[in-house]
Amino acid sequence: MGRIIAIDYGKKRTGIAVSDPMQLIAGGLTTLPSMEVIAFLKKYIAENKVDTFILGEPRQMNYQYSENWNRVMQFKRNLQKFIPEIEVKLVDERFTSALAHQAMREGGLKKKDRQNKALVDELSATILLQSYLETIRI
Image 1: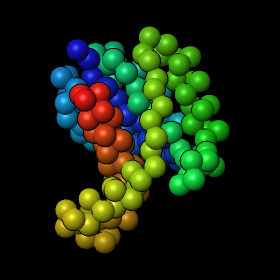
Image 2: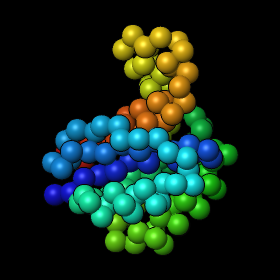
Image 3: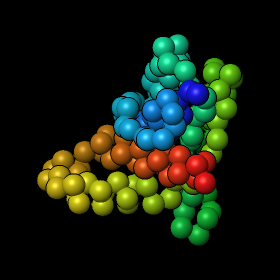
Image 4: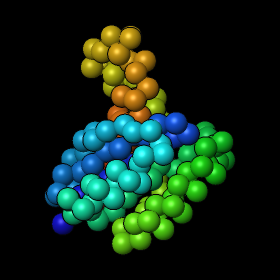
């Protein structure tokens, strides 16, 4: 069994999380400038078995696509073009940023640390992945 990677793609930064090989637990991996993600993933999969990419699907509260939708779809096309051997699944990412901020508050992080956007992006990807892992175990 290979790992699953979650990607919280943004205009400037992208948070990445990865599962353990048994696909039970999600952990934050990194946050990168969005232009570097595909190169990073190519290197990562050369060293680790990866089964699936989970890509956050940007929607608004009313289920309409958010302003980031076109960028995410272009990234998805590029990801499938440059790493065609790994399936890309879209997963609703609504609430992940809010849950990330809540987890940071509850974890006792100081306000200055909670404003670290790279940390928020990585934690959002981790939340996205953990929720996906829970759905595939049912």
